[in-house]
Image 1 (spheres, rainbow, N blue to C red):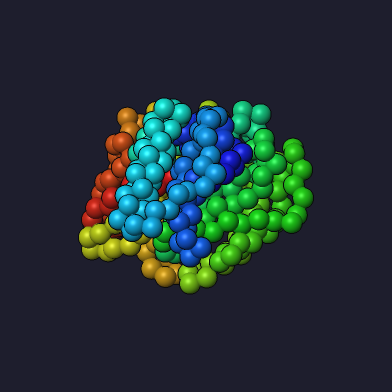
Image 2: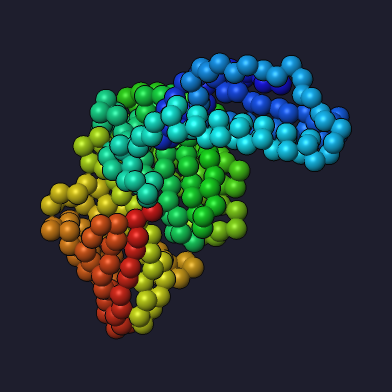
Length: 304
């Protein structure tokens, strides 16, 4: 029989409307074969004359031949629907093939407010963090990615437009943390951080404006010392700022920032610890030096 299943199914890259048809061929009570147009797309309205019944020949070979032909016809029809009923498009805010945004996500009306999008990097082990606070959609969520494990955080507290965010607790499946932000979106901090399986976690986070995209990089440094080195870059123009967060050992984290000029930057993370690096595409690479300790190199890749 032919079942008509109305509805709309959306997926990035596929935009169609219509009805999904599911063809079911029943040969025996115990043997049901289902051929269904992919759930990853929609199809236009089509007219299919349903079979009221199937004539099953007692001859086994003929029955198999009959079944094979009908199944082949249905598969060809489904393939044709895929080709002609849908058109492909790309998300213009993401780099094709990378999933990385190419434009700021914060809406212009939330520039210099406590609402909008916050992005940053995590150390202990390594990861990224994003908070979306009423960015025009009434969503108040945090999205953590650490060591390829993802967690979504939410809060029961009320946030008010134009006001500071004071000690708002967000909780997820494996993590929890407290967010505080000034009314103009500045000085965002995360405290009382707890992530299952990770101790001594430190996070740097910053508010993104609609005119300056925030880029997050994760990497490592090596040489006389080795460890984690992550970076958050704000904007792509000369004079824009990049922030570096580095883990030296289980209890020592150092942070610094500097201005980017011609995609290059010099940052003093602590009095004796300095880095020199450059941005190229989705990479941030360079050298580091630490007085009386040694020197080495670092390499980071953009992950958000």
